[in-house]
Image 1 (cartoon, rainbow, N blue to C red):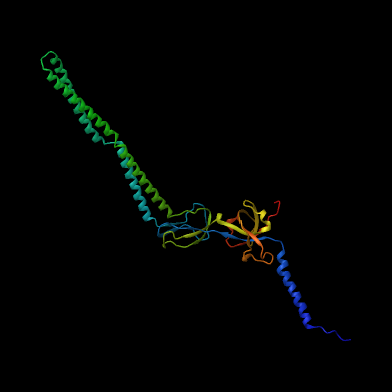
Image 2 (cartoon, rainbow, N blue to C red; image 1 turned 90 degrees about the vertical axis):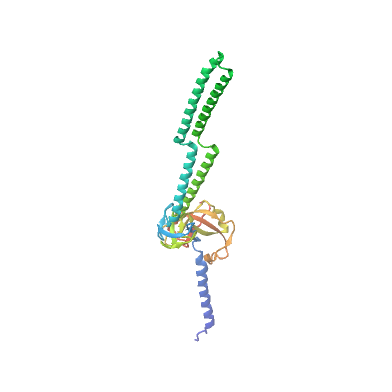
Length: 329
């Protein structure tokens, strides 16, 4: 009995079809396992700099460390700005002293001169009053002519006027300078105080504080190095700037709204994390190339951003798998 002839080409074709089927199953069917939304961690750096040029005097943090809100970061040599602040403080003291001097009037020694003049005028007035008192009855009896009475009356009135004038000058001397002069001095004092505030602000800008709890990502200058004005000295990654970015198919967009919470996992994460959705893109886009797969190619998706509860433990660029929301949750 003769064996049937087997065509080698046919065998090869069958084997090729079987291999192709395995490949298709691996690429397509395996991709349709339990579905998750693919995303990644993104972070926005905050760059700290000083508004003036200077040498870096001190660093209070190291790369990789965490700094709390209001914590010290670095210091630019403050000698020049401190001298300017001291000069502004002296200007404030001088302006306030001048305004106070104008408000309180002349010194006691100057007022003593007016007092002496007032005593002299009062003595002259008493003498004139006494002379008038002696002459007036004699004129009525005809011993002196009426012209004599007119002379002593005029002397008496002049002495009274002199006394009143000196007393008024004495009162004015206690009032201080005119109101407009005092107001001008007070404005100059306020201007000097503003200059001092500005100098203190510039001094404080040489040692900026962390705007929030953050991770020190990178330090660009070391103590002793010269940094130009507004040149970043270090970069921080605040916890509030760490977010999840993932993409939701357009058919499921109704479930994702700002304020809702999603769960996610990542390689190396000790446990499942949660994140609160803060932003949903108003426009769809095709799946980003970095997230292409056989099951998601050419799908329209929406970009969603969420703030994770465990931001301090997540590094930018880390892939994450977000568990999809379901209707009724």
